[in-house]
Amino acid sequence: MKNKNFIPILQALLAAALFGASAPLAKLLLGEIHPIPLAGFLYLGSGFGLLVLHGVVKLAGSHSTEANLTRNDLPWLAGAILTGGIIAPIILMFSLRSTPAATASLLLNFEAAATGLIAILMFREAIGARIWTAISCITLATVLLSLNPAGGWGFSVGALGVLAACMLWGIDNNLTRNISAKDPMVIVTWKGLGAGSITLLMALALGIDFPTLSVVLECMLLGLISYGLSIVLFILAMRSLGATRTTALFGSAPFVGAILSWLIFREALSGRFFIGVIIMILGAVLLLGEKHIHIHDHRASEHEHRHRHDDSHHTHVHPGECEVGYHSHPHTHAPLHHGHAHTPDTHHRHGH
Image (cartoon, rainbow, N blue to C red; front, side):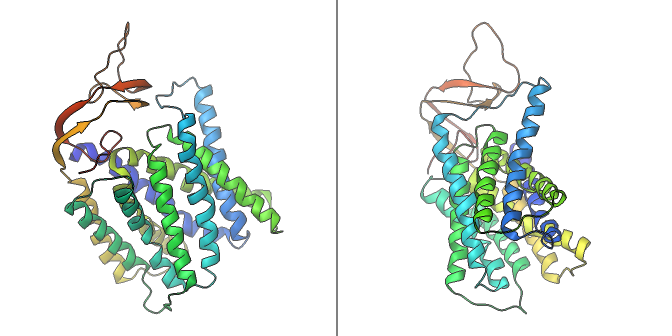
């Protein structure tokens, strides 16, 4: 399991690093752009940038090994755009008006817990004692980083709004998990274009001034890197780790933001930061060393996703040809009863 999980864990951590860099870099832009159009251009840059990148790859003649979205995937995608790309940021924006910064920072860590609860209760994702310990370590580490003993603390309607936003992002993560087997670049392109366009239309309706073209381009470039590429890596990690484990690792994003803030703004790193790093590493090690093995059943199914034939789940043949390496096409899985090490990946989202 160690070798199998190393790459997706690395993808989740890199996704967190790219996203964590967005906060201090966006702070540099806030002097020249209103927060609402900033959010819109970040999302739009994510979608438009990946759309261009996808086009360049196609023009270069590279053959995609990813599965395309189908009509059956659209409800999941629309739900993710609505909950995580539109409603959650709006609720958070209004909630921050009446919520102390320390409270909001602390409560935002509820996203990982919300994702896990929804994954377990609604999507039957399997979580054992080792994973609960790992998630607790990572959550504790992010709480330590977010905690501001000198700041104010209050629990209000605004605080409930922050929790509601986190719950919506938890729903977004789980909805995206259900289409994570499809082309992640296409998924994130549609999420970015959809959420970005609606947010910018909202800014226009509110009469908010837009910045210069150079600032817009800077925002969109940041969105491509810290939102677009980050979410692509996040989706790739979810394929192998499931929503709960991936979101827990994504909780390391604040540490990257803290380090970058220290480099850019010379904000001091407290002792809590270094304690948090140690606890975060412990959580990641627990996830990396997970060994979940039991006899389980696979029901007969038919779907399409990126796969190869050197695993124990894709034993179908291609008449007249021999497929080597990754490829994608509709295929059928016969019922299977066996046992091996696994995580809640595309083929192991069963209950216990």
